[in-house]
Length: 284
Image 1 (tube, one colour):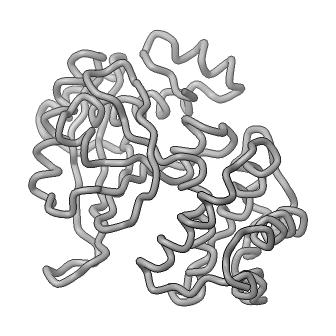
Image 2 (tube, rainbow, N blue to C red; image 1 turned 120 degrees about the horizontal axis):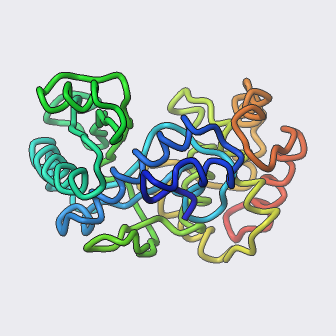
């Protein structure tokens, strides 16, 4: 696991991972949030950790982001449930680990009762043991600037997970590498209908392909399922659409400043992705 798991090891962990201590302090705060989810019976059963940080923290360390991204397996949970469950667990884990923390923001996007694919977007304010001023502010219910952003998506299809022991009461559910790659491939295809740019997915997939042996049968099946849930047509020719390439290339070079180990130039990375797609058992 690519995270510091206690306040006492932050400096040592930062040195071993060639990171600034301030970054390691933030990573420890992220661990506290993940641990809070693992310590809750309900949250550990319903939330699945996914995306770039799931990849970086558990499978292939290379590039991290600020947000912790989750999918909720049980679509019946709503924002008040999430706020209470996570808030209560944060209090318990915070006391155990010497960290003051509270949910200081949580909203639904897009708003409205009639939405199918919604995301709860939140921020956990935190203060580490040596931050007395902000610990007092959190105790008083006042917002602080040190936050861990998190997103919880509803009704997103998760195809495969593994349980990871964080040393808590329960295990954390984390998307498998095959599920993450399939999700990133779907996101690349969905750039056009959603008017998005997904440069990070090209780098992440290319990096994984260079270091891991993946189950192509699972990835093809997961991609078809995930795209089908979003009514996105999957084909090899769709990935060759020039607009897919153009959108993914926008500001790609800026990713180099975010990686710790491997940066692959865009043309090389995109060629690896397309070459891999062409080998998958999906429609031509």
